[in-house]
Length: 246
Image (cartoon, rainbow, N blue to C red):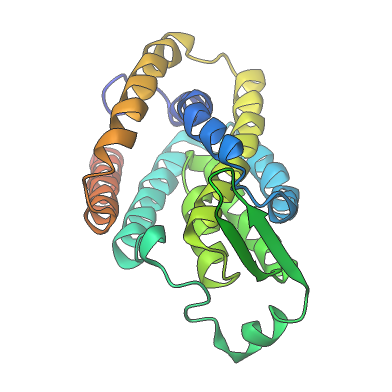
């Protein structure tokens, strides 16, 4: 939007299409490691996929000015979310759960995840309906502004559902991958995709993803996530300023 001059709906569609390719390597690794909680992912997808499709369709009918403002505000909120909340790797499962959720999340059986590297995760099976609701909200936001679902999903899986951070992140990436494909398909069918932008972005995300996974081992997550939040907030301010002050 800011550099190439795309309309908001074009930019969001290009973002989702690029995201589909960018997360492929990480998703494949998580699947190979058998660290995805597929039982939980199924329920989250029930809310996320229809919501992403709805958000993607709405992005083509909302007036450009309003969509730009929503996009800017969404980035500001997402930036604040990343700064305020601890990185997933640092979260304590069940933290801030409360007595009501503690009761609801107990006694529903156990989920066991056995990874290929020999690690076993055992935890109480989560109460599903709130997760479906949060995934629906995150999915709609993602369809509308191409961001939001992984942050909402990962945090609620750890804080509310007590999933170990490694399982929560992997499950969130799996849900995002399926939902992003649905959203990207809607954007591709509802308008003429800017394939030249996507084509140039794909090599970038593949190279960046490869470098990022290696560099990420040496950069503390408590530094990376707030830094990303600040970047989102700055871009959000620029987007709002460019629209409201024009």
